[in-house]
Image (cartoon, rainbow, N blue to C red; front, side, top):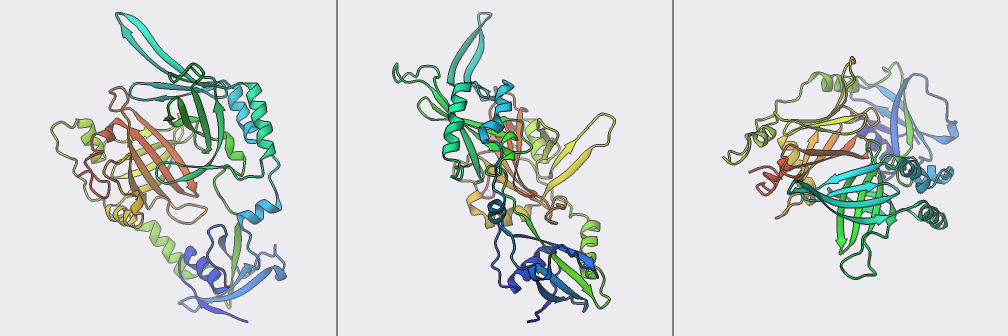
Length: 430
C-alpha cells in the first residue's frame, strides 16, 4: 500500500510522523536519523529490509522515504553483541594503582578519599602556635579485598547495576566499593567506621567526590564521578543505535526540501532576543561580589579536565578549552530566558523549590545546535549552598550529560547561600 504524507518541517517532527505512519509507538530507546541522499539512495540495506513511505512538502516536492523494517533498539544491540570486556573493578584498578586522592572541603571537615586505599575525615587548626590535627579514618581497602569483590561481581554479573538518585532527580547506575575497618566508633569497641563509595560514570569528570554523607552513625556514603567506568555499557550513558531514514528526491525535487533549508538559515541568522535585566537584591548586607554574580557580571568557572565550564548567572552556560598560543574553543550549552525557565518549571513542578530547598534548579536553553540530535543544547543548573571556611568566592562545578547534549551543571558556592532562602516559586531571588 502506498502512503502519502504532508511533510512537516523539522527533523524531529518528520521522524515522529514517519514512525507513527508505519504503526510504531514512539519509544525513546529507538532512535532515527534522517538523511537526504538526493536522487540516489545509499544501498547498504537490501530492499527486503526496508519499508517505503511517500512524502510531499508544502511546495509539492516529492520524496520516497526508506525506513528500516525492524528498527534496532539499545536492548537489541546489546543482545546481538554482549559485553565481554573488563569488569568494573578491572576498569577502576588503574585508578586504584595510582594511589590518587580526591578531596571534598566542607565548612569544618575535609574529606580525603584515596581511591582503592582509604577514606579520611580531618580538621586542622592552629592553637598556641601549634597545629592540632583531628582525624578519623572512615574506611580502608586493599588488593585482597579487591580480588574478593571482583570474584563476587562475576558471580552476579547478569544483574543490572543499581542506580542512585542524584540532586535534580537524575538516576544513574553506580558500582559500589565498600571500605571497612575505619576508626572505632563511639557506639562500642566492636564497631568501626565504614564507607560505601559509589562510582558513577562521567566522561568529563576527574574522579572528584560529588558528595559524602553520614547515612547513619559511623556509616558513610561517598559518590564519585569518574570516566574509568564509562567503558562498561552497564554504567555508560544510555545511548541507542541510530536507525537511518533515507528520503530520496523524486521528479526533480531538491536534495532536501526548501523549507528545511530556510528554517536552518533563519536559525543561524536570527540573533537571540536581548535578555531582560535582572536587578540584584538591594540588601545592604549583601557583598558586592554577590550583587555582581546576580547581575551576571561575575561569572563562575571550574572544571579540572580538558573542558572548563563557565556559568554567568542570568546570561549563559558554556564550556571551553584554552591553550597558550591557540584560539579558544567554546561551546554554548545554554542561554537564560525568563519565560522559558518559568515554562520549563511549570512543566517539571517537582523541580520547584520547597520550603527549605537543598538546591535551586534553573533552566538554560537555546544553546549551540547539537551535531547528533540537530537540536539546541540545554542545561539544568543546580545551585547549591556550600560554605567553605568563610571563602565566599570558592566554587565547585561539575557537569553531567545524562542524555545527548542535555546537561546538568552543578554549582556549589557560598555565594548561593546569600539568597537560598529568599526565592520565589520559580527559584529566583525575590
